Image (cartoon, rainbow, N blue to C red; front, side, top):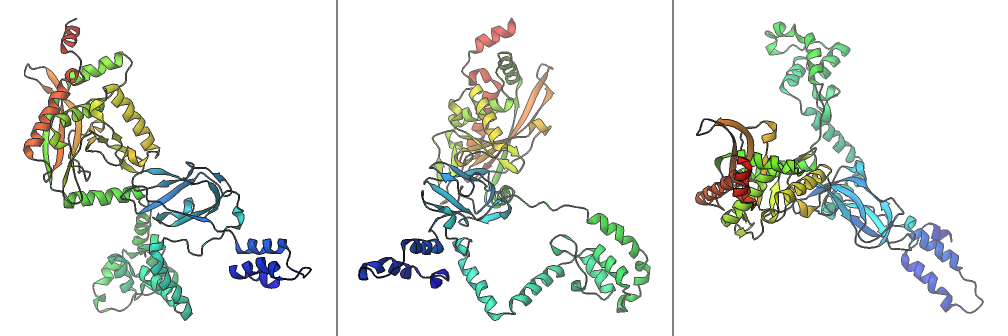
Length: 478
């Protein structure tokens, strides 16, 4: 059994299992318990769990928390872990029963490429402690790169100069002021230990090195004007110390995705803009009536409803641009509402907003916004949509223009209301709404018709909600 302890091939194990069938009766053979030990040494074949692609634009994800531990049973529909995608924190569900055998990537692993091996599970009843762990846990797409790096150790000393060269290359990245200081003392960046983030060499590092080592200034040809400038050199220490007082905060996957999408939108979509001013006095009065009945609604809920009704009146605005540059006309009215979270902006979707009452819209938005801030939205709750609304009025912003969220064709930017004199000299509440639209998808005439319809619905909320105006007028008189 010594050879078995050193490791044998599966073919040899199969031979040992079949050996008793070919030996005469009474001949000594390996006992079954020994063959069991051999299977133990070879391990159990498991099922690989890889970083899933949880959204169409996702290229990498970060594991936020494992909800299962090694050895825990798994049933179909169980959530293994929570993953931060480029848009939200999404639950990674499993559809097959089994046992979680090994966690290979945890919360400290950072951003992982899609298809990277993150864990291993085995079938029910198998010994999860004996699972085979692959030697490479990286995504299959990285295989060519790993093959190149694997050949490097064959040369022995080639790996050490490569690391040294990489480190030296990082330290060569110095600012102009630091380079000037190094030249003044005849130093090289590699001579001075760097204390800045990512091995960046700071002025404080050079000054401390010069003072500690007693380095004298070199006699350079340009040394004539240097004596006047050399006097404030000792004062640069505190200045450099102040410059060093900052913190590097890495971008989250969501922030990187937002930056990419904004850049894509502004560089590929011909943005056009139109602004309409709405008088929302009737909307504010209607909102108070809802509040008196115990129903909490916001002005933004009325805006969502008005946009949905206007899209029904102007179907040309309810369109998205496909990847093949064809225009898709949508049959349903799904409004994306911008919600600010700790990790970035996300747009949960109010489905079929044109068929919802104002109280239903309010409850839907509150529920989606709460789960968005907790990072618990599911992909279908924030992917898609036909029209976006971004409201900054609550922050005192009078008006602004927003960036189109592709593949959508338009986004409406809502500012805050302010008192303006009306035709009768009485103050009225005016609110500006600026529409950014894709000139390839919709025409200026369609946009103008849409904004006119939006203004009418928002200024006459009772008509929009299907309530009789006469009863409202009588209530005003009473």
